[in-house]
Image 1 (tube, rainbow, N blue to C red):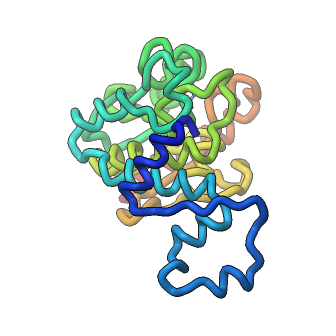
Image 2: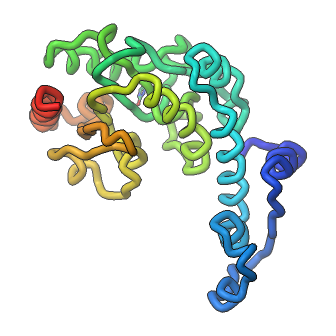
Length: 251
Ligand code: URA
């Protein structure tokens, strides 16, 4: 996490949380023996994994503060310093497109070009995504495009779990504001994080899901960057896109 100790303390103080740091995992009987008042979700997490407990506490504070108003939300993203990616980004990449779109496209995280331009999917993979959308009769302007992370991970490494946890409130707020009729999750990282699954993307694709309390239909497909490397998978992607269109029309 990119927070120094005093920032962590500030978040934790706001939460009224005391963190227990220990070197070894507690034995099950120790956890079972906790008084009722400490056996809450957060406190048990704190004892089992202090680092993730701090992340969870910070997430709770960030979530509570995240705005449900577009302009405020956008400036909260611009100014976010909740994780260490804020130190290495050129700029945040909020999302782009129609804020009342029926279709929400969710990718992984900004790459080098997106970090430079401040807009998602503008590099080579982005051009292919635009073509994929055009194939089903959609323009970039009609849909909304966002990512799991708003900041570029260095060297395009996979997002770390704590980065995803901390950024999640922003994407959730965007979904609540847009109220899309369908979500297209492009790539493994988007699919696995939205579906809270570690199943391989090859098994996640090919069917539809219902996302969140609003039960928004969600379809998974391959990431365009992967398709650039493995063009033979374009046929499966086309099937995924047709499935998404079918589900959208039925909704
Ligand atoms: N890959 C993504 O997942 N998102 C982008 O915005 C660019 C590349």
